[in-house]
Image (cartoon, rainbow, N blue to C red; front, side, top):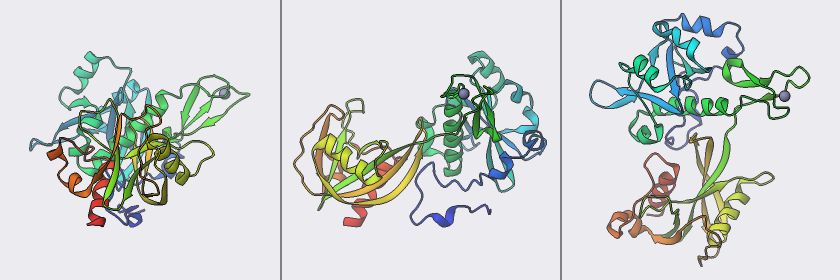
Amino acid sequence: MSDQYPLHLIVKKPNFYGFSGLDRSAHIREEEGWLDRLMAAPETRIVPVWRSRSLITDDGAGDPCAGMLVAMDHRALIEQAEFVVFLGEKAGVSHIGLDLSSLDEAQVHDIFADHGIFTDLRQIGPVLERFEGSILAYARGLMYWHQRHRFCGVCGAPSIALKGGHQRNCTNETCRAPSFPRTDPAVIMLVHDGDRALLGRQQVWKPGMYSTLAGFVEPGETLEEAVAREVWEETNVQVEDVRYHSSQPWPFPASIMLGFHAKARTTAINRNDNEIEDAQWFTIEELRDFEAIGNTLPRPDSIARRLIEDWIAEVR
Ligand SMILES: [Zn+2]
């Protein structure tokens, strides 16, 4: 695979945290001794994760960037890591993720004081370079899965990591059930009616912030049905012409967001439940100058923001 992989799949500009250009090189996961081999290569970098936080440092020009360590210089960290995963390679550089959550704060300070500060990626993601944001999100999501799958879901025995940290198997001889990293599908949709869009807000959001409706896909449901159901449950609005827009990995903690545009078939809003605090139709003019009416759009790294901005551009 080339370094461009899988950029040929993109028909629109990519969303944040996706299409990093990282080659996941799945064949390496199968290799006996992959860790020793990669740790001995001078180019290999370590991507540390501590309690779901990512190492962030300064790029020398005052901007934040991902803190990645030269693997050869930090071999001892392997012994301290709870989970070790092979992430992939880019331009000949292999990336290994280490979960160091078992270290206490003092140990983290001693080891990483010169390498950066562990930070919640959600706080810093929008200003990171795209590749760095993507690989940090990937590492964080994989570690979250390991942290929560130490035991077999079938029999309860401890499980062990295999295949470069991309599989866990039950250690009970009579069970041996495998489990794989999971990502939970969620649909997120901009519902439009001519020059108006339907946005809602949750009580926990900062005052004035409105965003597209969203919700998890349920077993036995198509994505289109999930879009229609969520909009109906939250606002009583019926939709048609559900069209896929794009997707975004959102490992905060474990989702993939599947973005849609949908046309309203009915427009009267009637909130059925307490999932959202408010829902309103906003015109394009209002959305273009949203702050003038005391509101804010969702964060710039979110697919919600992208769905809104692309719709405005298309309708204009
Ligand atoms: Zn088991």
